[in-house]
Image (cartoon, rainbow, N blue to C red):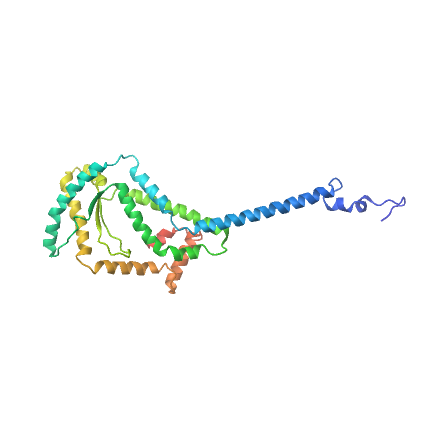
Length: 297
């Protein structure tokens, strides 16, 4: 509209000013704001893509950070205790060999089955040594289901949030397992160490955790010599159970592998449902139950 004096109204005379924020905002300022917003948005998008890819690679590294587990467990078993020296461990080793030299022949006579080599496969270990041995065992166990489970929980294109949830669960799971092994490492007296799922059918080893055996003998107020003999008898009996009956190890290994396959990428409905349930728990979509608890059930 044109006024009588020939001038245009202010609203029509400055269309660019009205469009970009009012008569006081120059057009070039509005253009720069738009460009800056575009650049910031692009930078954020690129950063999110890079972070998402890095998180995806990190999430695919595994369900457990085994170095973290071992570090936490060893630190826990060594906290507040200087431990035994190598000289003390070697001295105790001789005492256990003497005890087993008495125990093994009597067991062989009572069971009617010889057990060659078990004395040579006995070791006196520190708490930290026990942790190292059992981290290897747990790692072998978890690796059986880790691949198929990771395929479920780290899906292609799942995004930064899904990968971050898996990484967070790995952090929690690693600490849970580290504290568990640290707790057990301060209490286990002896162990017949056999890898059921190992490709090599090596004979098991007898491990005597001397620090815990001494501490328990003091707490019970019993003589250390007879107590060592009792522990040696107990653990050697486990060795007889496996090594005097060759069918037992492959039987247990087969049953364990069959159980673990339920959590693998099998064609059976039960296996798929169990795997999906664990995957939901790892992604934080479950009912509060940890994925380790589901495996143990």
